Length: 293
Length: 293
Image (cartoon, rainbow over all chains, first blue to last red; front, side):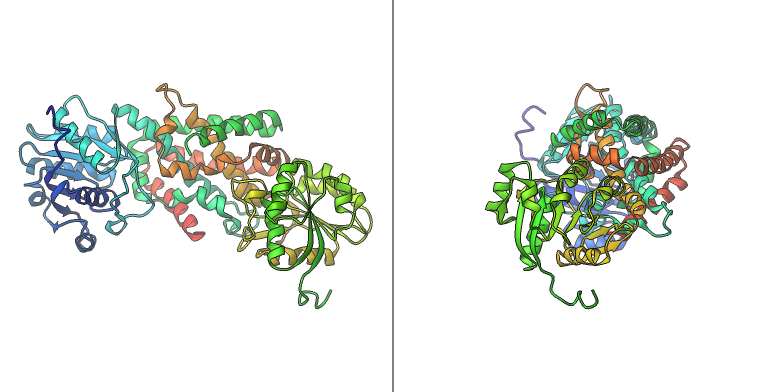
């Protein structure tokens, strides 16, 4: 593939399975860049696919998954994490020789463990995860610049074909992402830290405050902007986060314990009214946070 | 005071001690409403006061606190929580008969305990707390609409004069706030829940993720929009939050324990891979959160 990075990327036929925010936005980005011929939309919800067609996110609806992927050069699996393996099991035997399957699942270890053994000879599997998203979902939420300036992590296995990896890397670069290749375990631990843990904390926080009933009224009513911003991610899709919590269990438990240790340290400083240590704790956090502004 | 609510509010002279986001924004709101004659700015930082004067937040700088409050009808204490009592001790003996002292401290129990015994006969003290703010500080951050649509909680004591309470209520209403009167203990517990706890959680979260060194790199670099939004409040002023953590210790420890209980429940559901309970936990949280959008 020497020199291939210089050629303009062009995917004659892309099949997107699950045309929501993630799948739809990749289709729109590639269309806008002129990097794709036809986009075939596949999924369970016909109304959503019709919306996608009307909005120009896809060019054709295919209700039969097997028929939809048969001529695709690239298949992008963008369904919820827990469904990826079952969908891949149907899709992989129907793909044409040399075609590439990639996915956008937020957890990689469990997904690869389930899908890798199903990949036939001649078909390439490139596991991926674009780190982007909003609280919104569905084809209507898709927009072509979702991935611009974001990172996309690819986690190839020992069996992943280098040319297939290179093509998927270029797909995400064309969509505007910075592509990072890393090991599966590292991906799952890093994501547990920067994404999965914060979601667990936000969900637990809202439930803790919502359940506080000393005054027999919903004290969430008093919350101002800070609380609302802080807890926005607790509005995320419960099904998606159930799947992530189940599939990234080990890394998530490790990070929850890491968090509990730091909260316990802070609690002890409060209990002892240790103003100096409290100031240092808050300052350290502010400095880390300000560095990623 | 029957009928007084119909009269247009007018404060001939307002003294603001601590002309930052909180103090400056109240001055601007009252000026914009034509509800104040002269605003005297008092504070330790001359550069900040000069900025406030230049921006029209105040009409006059007074470097001598005692002289600055002598002719004021209303004195608004808007300095950090831990400094309120010391400032009040200097200010109260210098105030003219019938004048009112109010404050904007985020914690009320410790502040009232320290200030109430110092209030001379003929001077009125109305403890208050506008629930508003941003991560910014200083006179430059002040703007006249900060308090619009926000709640302001007043926590009168048994000694608080009803007319003085009424006047301070009208001040905040003119600034655009909905005024709620509640007991001191309730204020401190509600604020611990909706504001102080989330800040502690955000600070602990950033420190936990920042300290994660399994990969000898700063994994905060991978964080996307969700993490950045979620942890914005960890950029807040460490001195302010040290003061709050020290002065609202008891209510904050109670809420941290409430939070720990919910996080432990979630952790146990993850450990047991209990998909049904996880879904219910996330859904309950999402529903509470969506209700305050």
